[in-house]
View 1: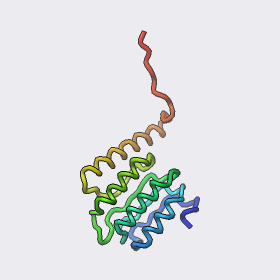
View 2: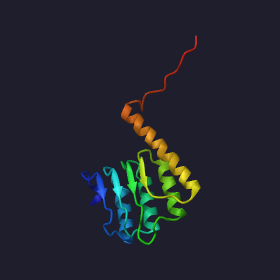
View 3: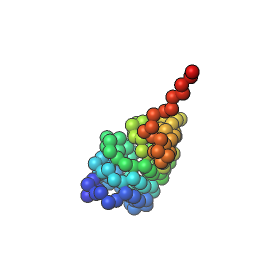
View 4: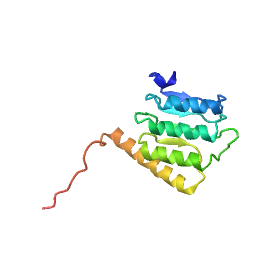
Length: 144
């Protein structure tokens, strides 16, 4: 139902007892949904494979409008999600230009740097969109 829903923009599922199978179901829904902007699945029982599939699904959805993605503090995983999840998040953010906030602690320095750079880029693009200078070409100075 979430895959084709056009009314929900804020999906707050923090501490709602989501388990491993629901992570993959949520990923399938996010693969098609274009209206959800905030996804918060913090403090649930999702596993690394579910989080990785969520990242891959959002990456495959070119029309995703997600601006915030939070999945910190999963039961059984704690703060460490593993390198595959961190790599999937870095791959997602390399392709996605709308996510400006991500809620999870990256342990690997390489993936943390890639994620931080992408978040910085996305925040700059969001600022430019707000100011109206996103589509304007840069001013060229003419030297006499």
